[in-house]
Image (cartoon, rainbow, N blue to C red; front, side, top):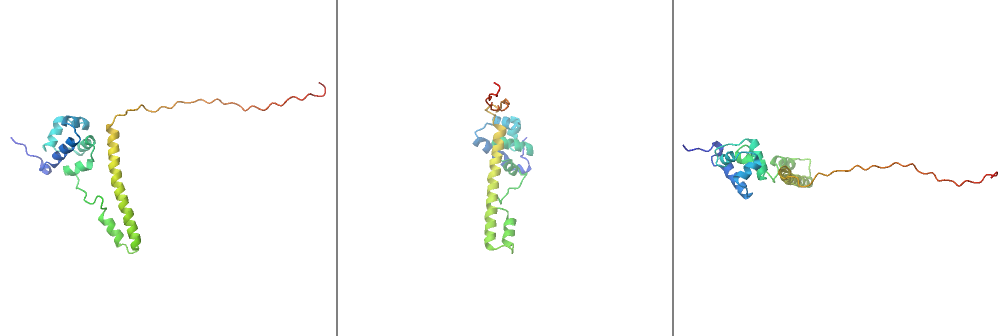
Length: 170
């Protein structure tokens, strides 16, 4: 009895992609399964296209592989691939270009700013995703910082003593 891969996974692109990512990270099947918190046989079945993982399992695998969950969702057919990444949304660019209230110089400035925000957001989301992954998978190696309480002694200011002046009767 032969097993036929599931529907959208027909080309086994998710399994192939997972295997490529795992091998490039120099992880064995067992190591990735442990990092992702799934069983070794289940991960093997996903890589061979016999099982379709849930979005939660894909997210766990993404953490283990240190890749974006979105890329796994795209390969699994859960999300459509975003083709406008880096180029910005054509709707936003068209709206800026079509606005008659803006001068050409203002349009150019807005498009430059928009492009820089889109590029910065893409960089930030990748860095944030990697930092989150590093925080969740890297054990803490330093002891937590502790603060020691210091007590301060309250002193009353000394009043200058005035020399006694001899009184007339002394």
